[in-house]
Amino acid sequence: MTLTIELDRDVPDRTKDILAALPGVAVRRGKGTNTLRVDGHPWPLALVSGGLAPLAKATAPMLVALAGPDRLGFVVAERLPEHVRHELLTARCAYADGTGAAHINVPGLYLHIEGRPSRRQVAAPTPPGIGVVAVRAIQSLLAEPTRPWTARYLAEAAACSTGEAQRVLARLKDEGLVTAHGRTRALTRTIPNPGELLDWLATIPSARRIRQRQYAYLYSSDPAALVTTITAHAFHNEVEYAFSGAAAARIFGATVTTAIPVTMLRIAPSLPLADACLRLKAEPVDSGANIVLVSDFGEVGIHGRQFNGPAPVAPTVRVWLDMLGEPRGQDAAALFREAVIAW
Image (cartoon, rainbow, N blue to C red; front, side, top):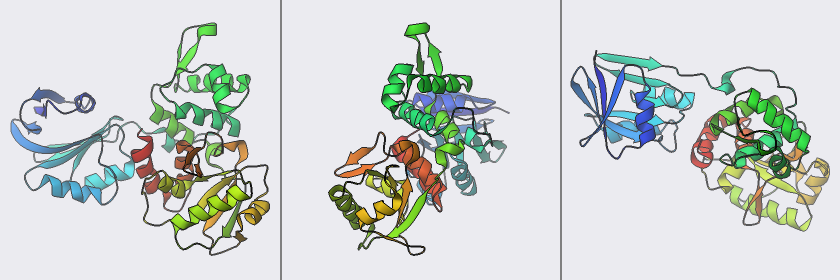
């Protein structure tokens, strides 16, 4: 069988590389339309490079409608989450991504590859030394994934000791997640694949564990007004905190869910959650909560926070990690990662 994919000259090089890595597939540039040829029989492609945003249940049927009856919808991206691949497969679209996963089903050809399993799917014990301070250090690395890092730079960025930074970098090197350059005093580390490091971090229990939380209710007419009310009370009563989870995603401008039943606040660990409720004028409740206060052990949400106007927001990596633990959070987290983190 001869399998060829002809790509227009405007298709990104990375898309070409992903397709060329598929077994038995020859890829070449052309001047015409994007086309899949199986033993010479042409199948015109509705090619989407870099993913389809947002990637969710509604988008696969949209791609089918875009392709029409005469073209095959084909998504090529750096990373396609498992639930997205399933939706594309169900809608009879083709896909391929940088992990090696692929699916093409046309008359005369059936190609299906699961790809390399992501680290997040691997059950692994907590590696030695990966406590909350180490998690904060890894979040600092991922905040600037293209920067060459030394232990001293990392210690400054993560507000930790140089020894802790050295242990984190050594552990990540052992995992194959950072690359070392140079020797001794000139030694630096870089992150060859930030997405892989992010997936690995999600498997670490200390990165996602919430040790202490308090549900509460604060009257507000809608989620947007609730953010304003919380921000005002926190400012006037000196509460150090950061929004996280789906509420923070919305503050970032990413609409990843139609409703936010509970707004997450990460509170400085020095402030007891009962006192934080008093300062925010929120009532602790067992049911009917619209906010959840989380004690920010290790300051993984407060350290490196950003401000959208007066509203403090946890680092994007922390927002994503917290979204994974929210009800129906996997899909929302995938959309946030695609739209904001982008790897």
